[in-house]
Image: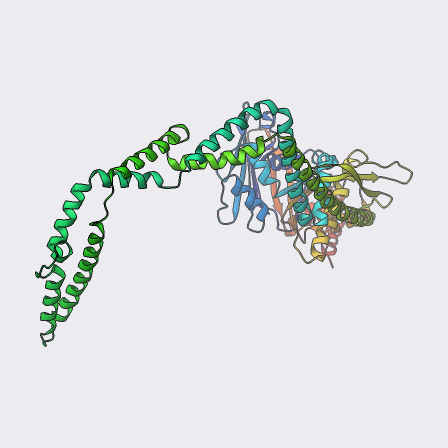
Amino acid sequence: MLEELEIHNLGPIRSALIAPAGGMTAITGETGAGKSMLLSAIRLISGGPSDGGRVSVGAQEAWAQGVFEVASSPAAVAAAREAGFEPEDGELFLSRKVPASGRSRSMLSGRSVPRSVLASVAAELVTIHGQADQLRIATVSRQREFLDRYAGDEVALAAYGKTWNALRAMDERLERLSSQESSMRQQADYLRESIERINRVDPQPGEMDELRARRDRIENAAEIAEGVTRALGALDASQVVDDVESSSAADLIDHASQALRAIHVEGVFSELADRLDSISTDLSDVVFSLSGEVDNEASMEDLDAINGRIHELDELTRRWGPELSDVIAWRDKAVYDLEDLDASPEKVEQLEAKRAQLLNAAKKAAQAVSKRRRTAAKELASKVTAELDSLAMGTSKLEIRVAEREQLDATGADDIEFLFTPFPGSPQLPMGKSASGGELSRLMLALELVAAEKHVVAGGTVPPMTFIFDEVDAGVGGKAAVELGARLAKLAQSAQVLVVTHLPQVASWADEQYVVAKGETKDGSIATTISQVRGDERVHEIARMLSGSESETSLEHAEELLKSSVLD
């Protein structure tokens, strides 16, 4: 949700700050006052193209910033995190600086980012329905995305995406086999010979360290034997000399412990005896370990075998090292790579058989997506057509055509078209080419209303979004204008709505209203101001919109209009 929009030096707007309502906010003002600059500011912070010509006369740069509450928008939070940003206090700051000459600068929460990053985050927060912006819905990809969101196809689309990715990977593998057969055969021969050589030696993890330790022991056998014998002689002579009656160190410590325990006086003696017992146990373990080393001798034949083995392993590490673990890892990867390089007819046949299985699975998954799309298309078109009747477009009709094709792509096996019939007898034409700016805005309003209602009825929540409507009231008046305002207010019950309008019947439904006005500044220049109107000020603005004046009659009419513009 857009909490705050701040603008400086953009066109006629020198400085402005608006805080839209959580529901519906109306932006009003006389024609040419500069309402379009608000949309320009939102397009800028949404990653749209910049134009230095829109910088206010005499200023060096224009600046716009939107503060968005994103705690309830997981998609926006995910997009920000993917770009390396963590929302602070549940908010994101999207801003843009546009110099009078030179490149613009995009910023997300105070840090410079590519414009594409700003656009990806804003796409999860703002949807602009203006004449220029709505041309995007004319693209097949946007229409398919809208239909899929309405259908709630996440599970089916994910299942298809998994099978499609597997099929594409297999196609790429087969293509490599056919286009690089000669070079791949040479590479396969090299890998095969290398794998065989490593397997003949059969290196084991940690083997080199173990062999070197064993070699060091053999080369220092005499020194080790002398040291072990002397240590055992000092600790327990009976371990190295038969029939020795002298007490071992452990025996002496045991005697000392028994002597202390014989003292029947409270004090530290019992504790000291416990410590001596622990020392005796440790000494016994040391003696046992050393006694096992006395006969652990290796012959010179063992040394020759160890050196031979180390030489074999050294040969491997020189080629595929530097460590033995690197050799083993290279061998394991080479075995996997060899499978991809094996271009034998048998291997190709196996892969083609597997590809046929993947293609069959992808077609079944695509059919499941197509079925859901056709059901959703019929329902969406019918409800939107019914909704158009309340938007002064009762003779218009929307049809959504889902044509299944044989060829698969990343989106499935469907060609999708939104076809609009503006009046009876008119041919069906692609949406965006058959409707005026105002009609297209109202058509998009109908689509958003039906989509929002679908989520609520299904027990879900509407994805948090700020909808901005421009020209939605073009060609509308009277009772139809009142109904248009009511429909916008209805959408605002589940989303934030900003509408730029010149109709009092629409503005009266808003929770908040801002007036854009152009006037002369102290220095004689012309500037646009944006101010919030409430209470009597709002009544006067609605009266001006009704009759162009603020007569007693128009004021009474304005008050009556505001009181009646309430949803049941």
